[in-house]
Length: 437
Image 1 (cartoon, one colour):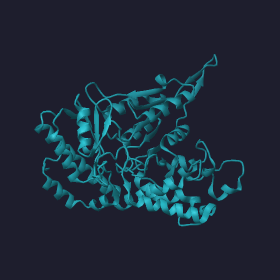
Image 2 (cartoon, one colour):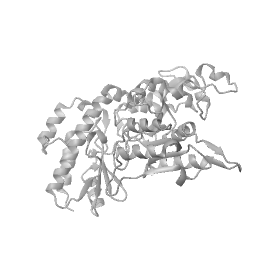
Image 3 (cartoon, one colour):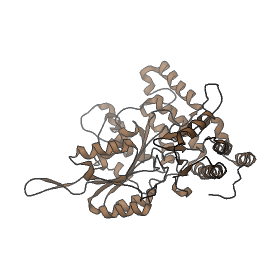
Image 4 (cartoon, helix red, strand yellow):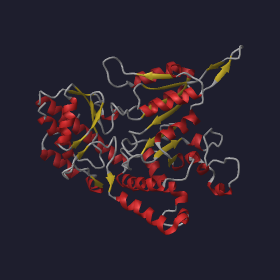
């Protein structure tokens, strides 16, 4: 934590004046309470704010639909036939990938299933009595992962006739700790050895806010002959990713959290080119992933489009993608490197003002369970509270501060660098300091 911070409104305002990204704040609609008062929004790790450009982007597509009808697939401002391509370069910037390694399609959990169909391929041998004996079949992941990850993994292993308790290695923090140590993850991967088929972690753990060491986990998985995949729902648009250089095999993410693309919107997918450019890679195929230049010949026999685009199944949901594109254009302008730099500083300032509030207000009882090292977290702090935690959360809401409550007793506070300010953070610290209990 930077000890040069000051817990004053004037200091926060000075930081805002120096912020090279401050103009992006004006590009978003901030939520308001029932009296029309603007709220301090610190819930971008759950649902990002709406970009002001999203409305016109959606109107453009509605107008083209009205004007062109079905011909909008080939005419109009952004023909729908290859609409996903308008998002490709920006998505590659977000992922740190080559353009042919990414595609926007479907929704997150759907994509996780499609990817695990391709990259979780357990192997078996047959005993003398004809019994199938699993060989390389285990998946390693964090205990307490986001439920969709656990549900998807469960159905995938059971679909291969395996038992979850046998096939899945869940890693928990050491006693008295809240986050996993990287050395413990790497040790568990090495111990699983040639039984390990897949390591599957989130990039940023949704509950604790821990940023896992993606390149180290990937390298360790590869060292034992396994593949490495990641759910980046809380990571894309939050961390400066370099998935290609880190040699990650596959990843998927949603677009409605830090990527600010609207509730339930489309998902992004990354597939390393060694898999995506190999037409022999197993996949569940659909019409829109068929090679584009022969797609409308309607012939039997699947020929995949090269790269991640070969995993597409259905044509693009244009209205959702239009909103997503509007947001991606802002990320392209801001750049992930600058956003990550501000995020480190903004989250550290939040840590500072909360610590100051705890020192000043004896009623406050909480521990920050997110790692203190800025390299091991994104734009989020998770506060483990006491029996007054829900009262504290409700008090913040009454003060027009929108955070997130997670059962049984964690408040997640996420200052998004695209639209949150240092003055927002100072106001949050002031509210904590004034909490009456």
